[in-house]
Length: 374
Image (cartoon, rainbow, N blue to C red; front, side, top):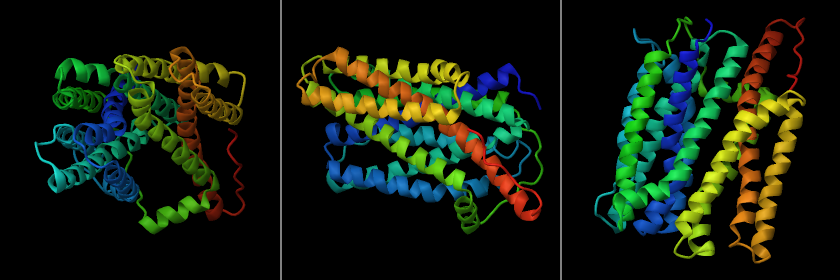
């Protein structure tokens, strides 16, 4: 089952659309409900945290449900299409809140945001889970995972760079109207991208998929020390990215300030987006020719921490309005995070293979697996 160029392109386009939706929600939902609709930041933050916990518990159930699905259209594609359409509707509803306030708005936000997370899981789990059904070789699986993560970075960067200006253009003096129209456009692009992906990326029959209970999943995870470390690394890196993407807009609006803060914010996110993509598509492949993945990971982690430390130093030194210094620091953070995103995907894929080897060793004591060489 060799991958064609069209299949790789279609899979990548699916990732672009998918992460445009995710980035819009992850980056701007707090700003929209706190700054525009005036909900309490404590309430919004609490709901975001609860939703993340719910998603973490919901993901394994969705994985089991997908594994047990069998239709004439395949195991994954029906979920990918239905989840995408439902998620597009909830995305629009999330950024097109009705003219209500107080308790009614709090209830509306809670319900719609949790529905958004649930429907996103409906399409996100099948998207990544269908890789083994597309190709059977480990090299192609790793290649497809890297393509997906890289294109996801492109989709995220497009949202981070263009949202504020697009909202201003579409809504004029009304940010509320601008967000509603922009969310509608993103939702349409998202559905078109996923439909194209499902039409061009064909599943192959991989037979009956073995499913495990939730306790068995956690037991397997705890037995796989490589997977545990990788999951913890992903959790920490994604938390840093989530906090950065949510809070940076407040920095430019209130600390950087001025009438041109939107332009400055857009410039910063543009620089960050470009360097994140360069980190994924240029820096990592070049570094991989000379260094092992573990060395690259350590270097990228050190670079990201250096970037954050420099941002703090610049602000404490009174140069927070110096765009050149802020952009240089941001470039270090985003380039490093781009590399880390690719690496954690590769590590996770390798840790799964390592877990399978461990299971083989349990079944056959004479077999001795080696730790993955990263």
